[in-house]
Length: 186
Length: 276
Image (cartoon, rainbow over all chains, first blue to last red; front, side, top):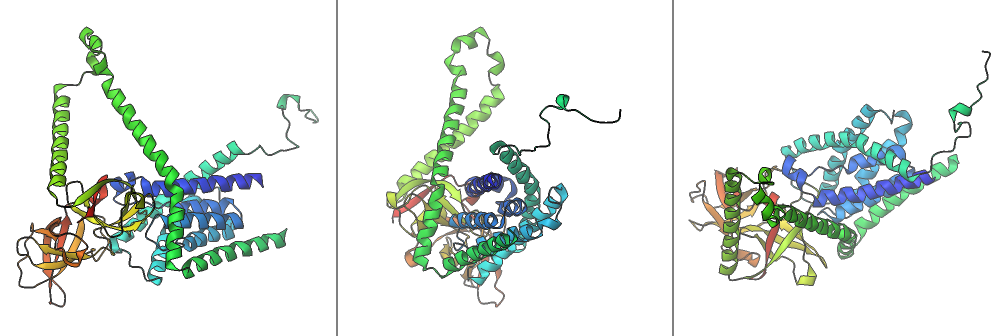
């Protein structure tokens, strides 16, 4: 339970920093010509590692933080992020979640799906965002970046979890291999 | 345990859907206040980042002034390998000259305009690419108000204030779908309207000038300025230059692509016109 709380706290801090960087650090805009949105990758990590309540909380807070710094109606990003996190959470038993390739594909799919859902919801609420074919290219590059970001975030979260949690107690593990009496025929 | 698991799943889905529903049905004014409050959570991070940046800059200055403070070392030839070459000095000199010229120009422009203005720093930008907005470091605390025009340091049109918070404000940039205004061709004085490009473009400096009369000759390179109509922006603020033009599909008016003077991707300091 403590491990899961640590993971939740780490992911929430990560989400806060990510949203802040996306809004206040203009480096990527200068290099790529657009601002990448890596929050879908974060939701994939949440879906892979956390419980239902935590996935909901991370989606809600990340979505609200994102919308509070943008012209999107407040709460619009919550649903797309939650759908992605929830889909990963629901099927994670069928996914080789520690495999790099699986994580890359999940991140790429999430990175492509979330902006599409956001644009669809924006048009549904009557907003008039700037769209075009160049946006498709941006969406593709962003999806690939999300694919790369998932393994990075996952390893970072695991490392943070290791630093913040107590090691798991294993009663069958000998503290010192030299003192272990190995019984055998020889 | 299994029952609890399913129950917690239902609770999570219910909570998210309820939150989204409540946010959508909330009155606009309450939603705006809530948005401002949630956005305020990033103020400590902005403060830390600004302070850190200032500290790094001052450290950088310390690093550059250090060799000058030890002239004896230079005399002894100990710092010979650190002394810059003539080519480096020439390049630095040229950069400094350019910077000084820009500042002089900005100051002259600041003195020449008949309006009162406030210099503000850009601290953030809309994280979504389909909106074009920047965040500035002044708000209601410095008496900024809604719809005040924003120009670059050199006097080119940047946008208008769209949201005013207690400490920060949002500026809607020219080219955002919600920033439309009346403009005219400086030579022929023909009026049209500046709108966002019909399709998203990675180049934020491209906008469209539409509803120009068909009998007007529109040539590439012609200057476009604000017309002052509608009262949103004062007259004669430089907007951009015509790139190309065409007759609209229905043949009723002429449209032109305009390249903005202000580089909207590299704004660091802007000027808010407080009285115009």
